[in-house]
Length: 138
Image 1 (cartoon, rainbow, N blue to C red):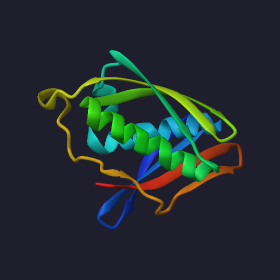
Image 2 (spheres, rainbow, N blue to C red; image 1 turned 180 degrees about the vertical axis):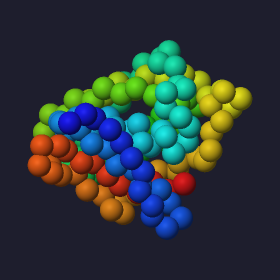
Image 3 (cartoon, rainbow, N blue to C red; image 1 turned 120 degrees about the horizontal axis):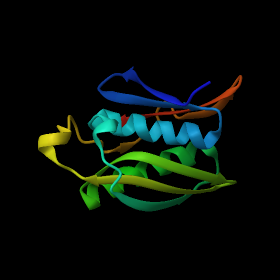
């Protein structure tokens, strides 16, 4: 099984879903899916590393906090991210996101993601893979 991501339809918003052989990989892929709502993730150069830390009482809330932290970092730094490395230890997440300043001419941002919601929020092991999903407000 390879790590991957996908979008799923949800009324006026967009669902993001990450898959991986580990919880961390699924969280990384959910982040890629989040960026893919805005732009093509492979078009984002990994020029600057940003450290992100979150804490939440369970995996579902940790996913929402992680994605919301990314949205906040992208908005305040005026950056996009295309590569992620996540480590989860209990209720703590420590991650690095690599990206670059938004270049509208090159990135062609489609929409602005306002944040991750608790709608369809789910983190679970399914067979031999992890799934991490939620709906993001666009």
